[in-house]
Image 1 (tube, protein in one colour):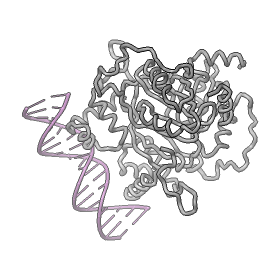
Image 2 (cartoon, each protein chain N blue to C red):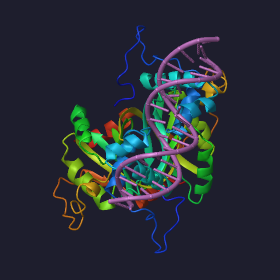
Image 3 (cartoon, each protein chain N blue to C red):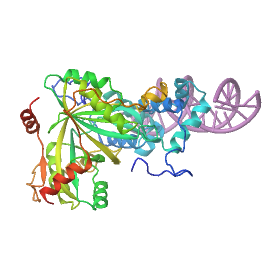
Image 4 (cartoon, chains in turn red, orange, cyan, brown):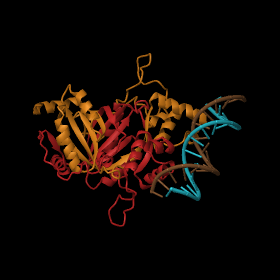
Length: 209
Length: 209
DNA sequence: GTTGAAATTAGTACGAA
DNA sequence: TTCGTACTAATTTCAAC
């Protein structure tokens, strides 16, 4: 389920240019993220195009994969999964395939991303209670050979989840924010830290695994 | 935008029991997460109830807040935001309000959660390129007084994002997975680590802020 | 909580600009 | 390409059971 999966490369060798997205496509995406159940007729009106055109573009966006799916956002607390946790996982090298296979068998896992930094992957899980998280991590995850180590934090509050996607510079003037001359940051640095991939791995190797 | 926001407490003092969700409600949520644009008629058929019933329940779930919104999942790469990063933020105590206010002014931020552990919040951002992330963190975030420190990691791949919510024990037998006797874990512990709130804060205090 | 029929709306096809 | 219209199919609403 990589972001680029399932799309054919174009003849030039570059990928991801099946559809040139113009500002109207962007508007459509914007509206659809706010309200995924809006009718195409209403969508056409909000975007300012004809119904027929809206249908064409809607289908194109779907076929192209720019729209991956439509989904309902659920209140997990009300659904009985009151606890959300993040599990940062260190994966034994060359066991990624097994790791992914195991993930597929864990329905509690809602999101998984491979990251740079101290750990290799971040997993978000929703569970009924704290004990269930504990069980998941210590019983299930610990038994996966591909998992070298984990670190768990709990989510106390989800402050925001935005349904917007638009690059600010796509619709509002294409020349506005070009990073042509990336001026050196004139800010209090030092308290900011970027974590690359190598750093964490090296630290882990010391601990032995 | 807390998970519990906007709902009245019931007379007993407990919150979140506006609607008793039965297994059919759960099935509805399940279907709607897979396909947010399904018609209520088709939904009724898939869940095995009448259309009128489906409409009633659909509306109830919406009114209750169990369904928060319908949204389209967008391929951010195709939308021009090819880079996803996580910014872990340490927030100066008693400046949370300001921190949240600043977040609201940053449309690049797609998700923000308050966490236990070494940091106080995790922010997910989508940007056009790595330089943009750098600018965001060093120029914008660094200038927020509420932000004491940040740590940034990049997302290399989003392995999975599941549209399922159901507690495994809700529909498939309510007695199945009760944590009545939470047996002690008989697993290779030691490589697992839970990170509470205090630990990280203490470590940070040493560094001075 | 269910069924069925009326009213409305959505989706499709096609010609013109 | 996009728009406008007419046509067909489906969905929602509302009634009685």
